[in-house]
Length: 413
Image (tube, rainbow, N blue to C red; front, side):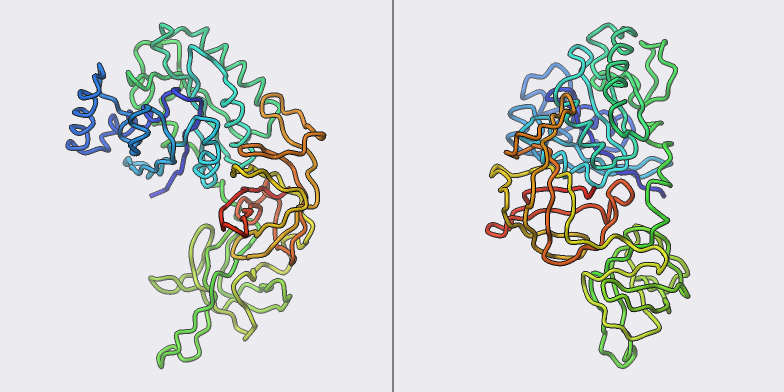
C-alpha cells in the first residue's frame, strides 16, 4: 500500500493538533480507550467538548499551555493509503522543529484561522515548505464555523495566498475550507458550506498523486557500509549497502563509483527477502559488483552518463536552527548523504525576509529561525545535485563541532 508523509503547519492556535485528532477520530483510527482517556482529560480541564488535540500533544507543557512544542508523529491508514503525520509547532521559536518534521514530507497542510487571515507564520511556513521542496501544499482555512461559513471570507484568504505563492516555486497548491472542531470537510463533506464543490481533506490525501515525487531519473546510491560476512557460505561476498537516493538500478547496469571514477557492472541486488531484478528510491538494498573495487562509506554509485556535481565550493540556502548565531568564517562539520566532512563559511550573501521575500544583503547576522544564502568551502569534494532536482543528494546539515548539535539545515543551490 502506498505511503504518504505529510506535515501540518501554521500559526499558534490555528487548530493543527485538533485537525489531526479529527482526522484520526472520524476515520476511526483511534481505539475506544484512547478516546475515553482524552474525554476524561477534557472533562478535568473543564473543556466544553472533547479536546481532540490531546491525541497529539503528548508533552505535559503542551497540554498545560494548549500548544505544540515538539514534533509529534502519528500513523494511520485507510483502505486506500497509509499515512505518517508530523504535527509541527506554530510558535516562531519552534520553527526549527517545523523544518525537522517537513524535511521528508510529500505534502504540507498549512492552516489559516478564518478570522485572522494570513499571519507571519503563514508566510514563514509556506516559504520553508517551498525551500524544502515539498511537492504538494494544501491550505486549510480553519474555524469556518466562527465566521458563519462565509464564502467571501474563504475566497479573500485564497486570493491573498495565491498572490503570495505566485512569487514562489510552488508545484501544486490546493485550498479547503474546514472546521476541525466540528468536522466540516475534514473526513465528511460539510452541509454548512454548499458553495464549496471540492473534495474533503481526507479524500484529497487519499487520492493526490505522489508516484512522481521521487526522482527516478538520476541514479544515485550513496554507500552506507560494506558487507563482508566472512562465512563459509558467503566466503567471497562483498556487498555495498545503503538506501537508494534516486533513480532505478538493475543487474547488468554499467555504473561508476565516485569519487574514484572506477567503472563496473552490477552483478546482483540483494534485499532481506532475497535477490531482486529492480531497485528504486527509497529502497534499502545491498549491491554487488562484477569487479573488486575499493568502495567504502561515503562513496556513491552512479551511471556513467549521468553523474552528480563534484565541488568543494557550494552555495546553500540554510535554515538556522540554533540559538548561537552563524559565525562568519566559522568552521562546522557537515553531513551530506553518507559522507562526513568539515567546512568553512566563506560568505553570507543575504538574509531572506520571510514576509516580503526581500534579500537583506547588509544584514549578515544569522540567528535562530533565520533563512539565509551562504557559501561554504568543504574539506573534500561533495557529490551533490541541486536540491530542486534531488532532495536526497541536494541537502545537508551543519553541525557544531564543539557540542555535536545540529545547527543548520541546508539546501544546495
